[in-house]
Image (tube, rainbow, N blue to C red; front, side, top):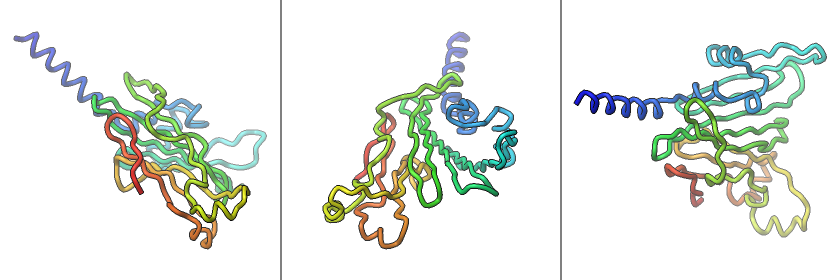
Length: 213
């Protein structure tokens, strides 16, 4: 009986531990390959203060800064130069739960300049035993071509010319079980060309399914 109670406790502890992994703990597990220039000490400072100023490199004149924002199972980092070039990039993390309790993390990175940015990286990971493991084929496309957002008559009128518009993933959505891929026309008249402003993907406990617009 005592042995059964111990086994039951260990099983329940394991389940609760798996479900209890916060997005902040997962964030600290990401290597610098994905969270550039961030030591563990820098991550702690960023999480505590909401912002972090990177030490200046000897051969670089500009100061780089990162702002941190978190809500529920979501983290957003924005890297930028407060007094220098207008370039930036944004990293988003969002945690989902598999049906068996395993945490799944979506990692997105996009950037450029305020008027010309695009999606750089989209990856998905499982998180077990304090370790991240990349997972493929969970239903999220790496990118979506601009033409998929536009009306057919606009595509015909372009006659093969390339049209650039800002597009990127957004992991911060009204539905916690959703991620979106959005288009951001640079000027107001471009909105008339847009057939759909976003593609949404819903997490079903095993993979992401496209939502009909």
